[in-house]
Image (cartoon, rainbow, N blue to C red; front, side, top):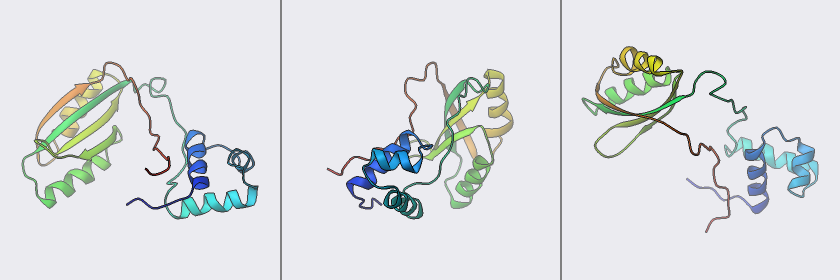
Length: 158
């Protein structure tokens, strides 16, 4: 559900999304507000859920997680209990970066980050395919990450 925010709020969101470590003084300068109203707006945007949190962006290659796989998952039954169990187990798997319930011939699309193909084999065999309800999987290994952005467009509505 999209909620209305003004042009200044959008500027604040763009700036913080680009650099979450901005000081309030620098942010207020960039969005042309004095520091106190700027901080009040940021706190309101946090309180209303527009800003979910702040985190550092890490380099997965330097940390030994350079392999990306997208895995399609088909379940044997699409019942609430199977969905709930699958979701709960996926949430506990640190290798899973994203998991989306999708429409079409499959049930889920998962993005994982792993160390190497041996790690992928372990994840698939000991983890994913052993989950209750998993009928089939199909994996796509990423050869080159062309674009990976988590930036949400905060332009003015059309």
